[in-house]
Length: 252
Length: 252
Image (cartoon, rainbow over all chains, first blue to last red; front, top):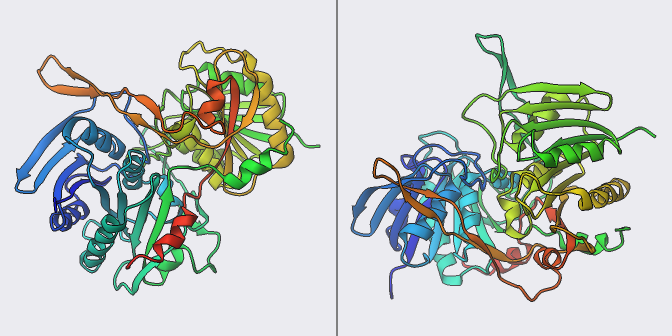
């Protein structure tokens, strides 16, 4: 059987540990093409670059692996790879391993998951991997065997068009895997407000996640807080189908 | 009855015609606070700024209206307004009027809709308005009465937590309103590949939308192509609930 063609990207940039671990793992499964941002692009969501020219360069080529980096966002990286590099649609797109959680509402801000939604839109089986540890030196070793298992099982079963997987791992020991739903919650902003040497006010985004349903056991936040990997199947179709029916009764 | 407090933003920047039309309309309904990006932020999705300081300045204040602009993304604008400007949660957030369609998959790239999802996450009734005309001089006049009607009906009925409205109008005559679902489709990238004076290759994003279901009559794309305004109720919960069940049968 032909080895699968696997496209890899992330939002922490081409030198992050997470993408290098993911690349090593994926080379056990298939032929790998990496197209990563040339630096940190955290919080870039599905942003696309329209105001300045995009460029990319090849940074490594060896048996089973070609690596590129680009000045674009994670979503740009996927588009550039599909349009200008790959001869055929890849069999799989994986993004990450993100240094930091992309569970719950974080999915809508995440550049890592933006790339996954982009792959999904293009009909590619797509998975995002993240770990609940922001540090550069996050330890991915316990997560590794699960990444291989989840990837191989996904390649075997496939995913329906428009659905991708958002996989998050807790720090430290892992008890197993939970299929979960996206936990309800919001970020409570606590901007750090500072004064610069010219006496002008400026702000840095900080804040914390407020879980709206801490008692629910079927959410990604619960799984992570209790030592399990969470897998949330996630859709690019945002339609609220129940509400479509309700709106028919409005006076419009 | 107290006049509603309405927060307005967009992704075309504070000088765009669209946001100024929307501001004029909303002043008929409530007290208005505008916090808009200080220039174009198209395609910024739910991007948040973490790599440079955010700032904002007041640019106008008069009876029933205060306007600010910020160097942030549309999502930053909402966060800044909620955190540092407004004394209470607004009764309504409206974003736009976007110069260009945000129907179908465009919702995931749109800065206009990013701001709407941000408002929605924060429990605010939120609506995005867009028109299928990219030009600076897009004519919003026919759309205006519908914007007022949709806004007032939404204030009257409310929206459940986690659901917002994505409203798009066709160019020219409008036959009426259709409640719709997000059309399936993807952007087929056709990067413009160019060579700069230093002989280096660079790329501009172009491309076109490929409708996967042109025959379906219940989609936003169909409504717009047939002269109707489309309203798609859209969720910040991306979970594919059917797939949650299927995944339980995988070997994980």
